[in-house]
Length: 294
Image (cartoon, rainbow, N blue to C red):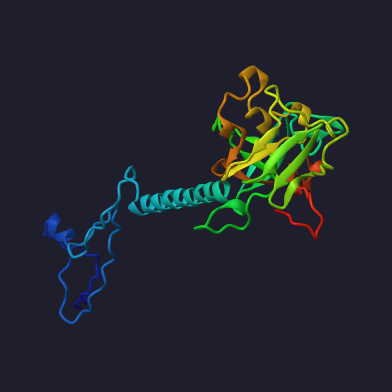
């Protein structure tokens, strides 16, 4: 009996792979019709500008910006211009309109520098001098210096100083000191007119005496003014040519007794300091309303 040959069971087979290592690990070629897979870009550690992108110039940190320089220069010019305007206005105001003065000495007591009932012999009250009132605008002015006005002026012998006195005599007047009183002679008062002086205190009233030169008659020239302080016993004024006894008084020049018009700085109008003494300084009135006030 023939024995049937039974098929042998399949055995695990191992076919030898004769490829090289490079062929095994090399990427497989793409088959036709197979879609391309997108490649994932590898991260880059540095960023480079493409040739088409222009490089932006950078301003060095140590170089100031031109705009900031321009703003600073504009600010400086603006401040300088404002200061120039302010100083210019102050100069114009003090030269032609009004100016502050600090009064020194007792020559105008009790009208000025009388503080708490005592005449101050040093610096005392501050006053405002109205310069505009006497300014000459091509032959015209708000007012001319008048008899009774309190004025600030430069004395003829020293134009570096300022004096403050009251106008007593105008150009063309004759002033006479008789028995301690003041008399005015002019075309309206040919026989003389005693000037009432209510601003004089008890010590000075009736005691307007001549200076050491004993001159008692003063003929005021044109363009000149005769002035005296309200404290007649302690005032260096027209009677002594604005010189005290230590300066020798008058020295023979007849015009040295008077104040030239151009030396008058202005009219004392207001006492500004101290605050409890603020007041307006009024001119003296020597005539009745119906009388001539020249």
